[in-house]
Length: 463
Ligand SMILES: Cc1cc2nc3c(=O)[nH]c(=O)nc-3n(C[C@H](O)[C@H](O)[C@H](O)COP(=O)(O)OP(=O)(O)OC[C@H]3O[C@@H](n4cnc5c(N)ncnc54)[C@H](O)[C@@H]3O)c2cc1C
Image (cartoon, rainbow, N blue to C red):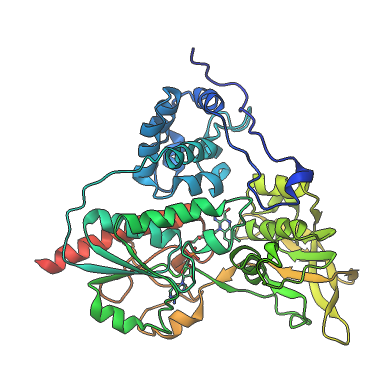
């Protein structure tokens, strides 16, 4: 019997004391019965607000109907049609700001758990060897993709569907971008990322790892060899506060900290010989998803006290609700309304602490959040062994410096038109390379739109 509405079906999770000692997934996933019961809560709103709020406009209602009917294969194929990596998006999308946030049950019994339904059917497909099947009518033109993050992945998949020969260039030794090196395995297990990347090879995308465009292969060479190019190089260059003491040993950017931990497997030391300094007391500056990832990694690496240093309050934290809740359960100490003014060090050049200023909240700024205002003379210090700055990233200069012909904005992102084409003929761009710090699903949507624009460009050129 269909039972609509009702309270959200809770998902089993690793107990806190167990999970802070490992990097395995925190949510343990729904069982078949649970996933159906959760899907049955959906009332199939006529106007489908969840679908309208989804940046790739997934056919969410149809996916849910198929889950209710236990047609997991159909449900998966529906999700996969609009979203190249549902197992990933289901786990990391900020659903509360998108599909789930507009669900009529959001403010009462929690919206339908759309993300976890999506992850379930994608995992089911992976376990049962179910893949999207499509016939590729090969075309002679070749397209290069620079960067293997979600933008590059979705662009590559769609271009293959159009029939182009696709070659992907990735600077690192593993493909996946932030999915691989940034988001920790306890949020996004790496076998899932590897599976999605291996799918690219299966459908005929040539993935060239350890190829830095602008260093060991030049952009102009690619322009001569390929009919079109997609730039999905992300935003991997960290930002710093520019305060005294940032050159001390024991101070990291979030990128470096996460890169060492996740991609270079510092948490499996000494099996992997990547060093990481994670003292007993660590201060993480920022309060977004990246800061949460750093804090939760630090707890798992053995830090006794992990402080989040944030100039606003928890309420204004831009992190996903689930990440903040998990971090607090795991022991994060959230310090509200503080702003670092100086990092303190000893004679040997190591971090010993931080000086903070107290803040208060003022009128809303452009972001709609209350502006943090310094309280003069409120400085105080605290002892820390490690400091990590998680303040957001901007596009890496390495590629941009080699491509002066590509127009950029004043924020250093690539300038594109409404079809995501750059000013250079046949070159499209998307994801964080044009948006700065955005989200996986926006990168996926861009990759898709850019593939369509590249296809249109190649067709026009043929005439
Ligand atoms: C720690 C962290 C946590 C996050 N958590 C979330 C989350 O929970 N939910 C969410 O939706 N979003 C999250 N985000 C944001 C999200 O991951 C990004 O918006 C998304 O990955 C952008 O995709 P992209 O393909 O544009 O770039 P990226 O994922 O950054 O991929 C770019 C790729 O291009 C490669 N590259 C760069 N330059 C070159 C070059 N010159 N030659 C060849 N290759 C190059 C890079 O090595 C990289 O692999 C998080 C980001 C970080 C850093």
